[in-house]
Length: 179
Image (cartoon, rainbow, N blue to C red; front, side, top):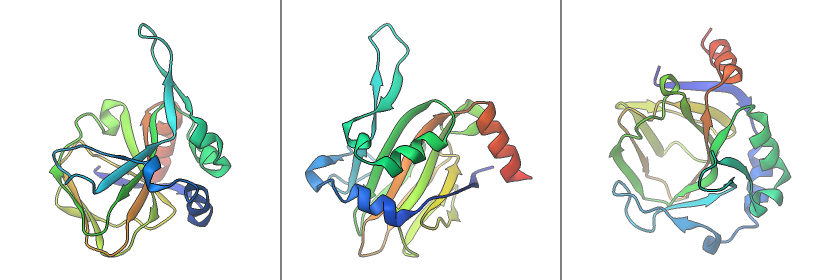
C-alpha cells in the first residue's frame, strides 16, 4: 500500500490561527538536493531530550507549548514520534522525484501528513500516482517509494508532518482503515 487516508480530521482554521504567530524568520530553509534553495521551509515543534548515550525522547518545544491545538494533535497519536513540524512549500516550487528510505509501515517508521493549506494545483505523485489530500485530513504515504511534489499554485502549500514509530496502536489504526 502506497497511501492510506487515516480516520482523523483536524480543524485547519484553528491550526492556521496557531501557526500565524510564527514569522518567516522562525522557519529554516530545508537544504535538500531535490528542492531549490529558499522554497521549502520548516519549523520543528518537538525536540530530542537526552544525552549522547541515551535513546532520545522527543518532547514539545517552546513553540509547540504556545499552540494547544497542535499539542492535542501530537497527543492524538499514541506512539513515539521523531518529528512534528510545519512544512511550507512556496508557490511555484517543486520537490523533485526522490525516495525517503525507511519511511514505510513495513520498516516500522511512518510519515504522517496533515494538509493545512493546499489546493487542486498542488500535486503529490507517489510512484507516479496522484495522491489527493484535502485540508484537515490525515494521510500515511509510503515515502520509501519515488515521490515528488509540485506546487503549481499561487499560494504556499502548508502541511503538518509527523514521523512516528509503528506500535500496536498504529497497527490497529491501519487495520481498521484498510478493512
